[in-house]
Amino acid sequence: MADDAIQRESMEYDLVIVGGGPAGLSAAIRAKQLAKEAGEDIEVVVIEKGGEIGAHILSGVVMDPVGLDKLIPDWRTRDDRPLKTEVTGDKFKFLGPNGEADISWLPMPGFMKNHGNFTGSLANVARWLGQEAENMGVEVFPGFAASDLVLGENGEVKGIVAGVMGIAADGSHKADYEPGMELLGKYVLFAEGARGSLTKQLIAKYNLDEGRDPQKFGIGLKELWSIPEEQFNEGYVQHTMGWPLDNKTGGGSFLYHFRDNGEPFVSVGFVVHLNYENPYISPYQEFQRFKHHPSVLPHLQGGKRVAYGARAITEGGFQSVPKLAFPGGALIGCGAGFVNVPRIKGSHNAILTGMMGAEAAYAAIKGGRQGDVLTDYEE
Image (cartoon, rainbow, N blue to C red; front, side, top):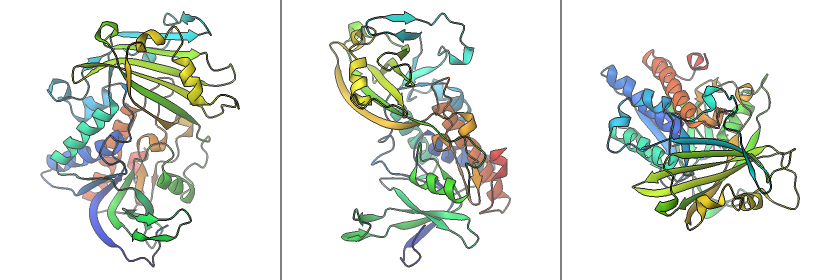
């Protein structure tokens, strides 16, 4: 926890939000909406470790619009809307080494189908939400990582430490050391995404995973390709399972066609569960093999890779979601594990849980409370 011997400046807010992704930004927007509806104001700050909002979010998403519809009901009619490509084709395939079996005809539950969803760039969604938050008066600080918790006398979360710089690998202070600043709030919402450093501390400190299944994780490898117009199939979505993974290894792929600023793109990705055991071929190499499969290569040929990255994914499902609220704060979004694994989706749940966390925190603040457990959010 924060070192009390270090003297830091502090700033006080009503609500502090750690993480500038869909969950954190939606929470900030919802808190401001509630205050505006009541003719009041609420001081909200969002800190984001990336150099800009969206910097740490990999492009490409198929999003159920239910979250955006609830948060910003008129988003579909706006010229600056971040998602413009509706899903027009939806395929699910099982791959072998040299061929495929289209299993889209299987009687899958309706919630696993993608018609009515939108495909595009999740980073653009985050940037758009960030601008909306700033327009409403939220203070958004990109480029500041939250490195520690600030605790009160009774063990409640009072805030976080952000902006610490100049720490050597062994923990010692270098010549350019900066102690950072304390951002204090009546409540703190943590939207760090999968395996967030402070989220791990909170789960351990407050035993939030007691009685829950252990969380499971995968790694998602993703590339964004600019492709020729003649092979672009706007709104096409494809998911696969099978080759190149063996029968003991969970995982699969996704491939989405969408436009960004009028240009045709394909987002292609490969997910491998972290029980992967092949010592000779890495998950990255499996991804490269996968891109040469006859079901995938035609989507990329003649194109150019313009971005790539990887990130951890929570895959434990609802039974692995920890207790969400603790004294002074709550977990929202993927930090709490709200990825719907059968649907291969989490962004809409991130938005919705961010809204729910903000609603519970706002009601508590309006009632003159602070630093207690937001039981309404958990319920």
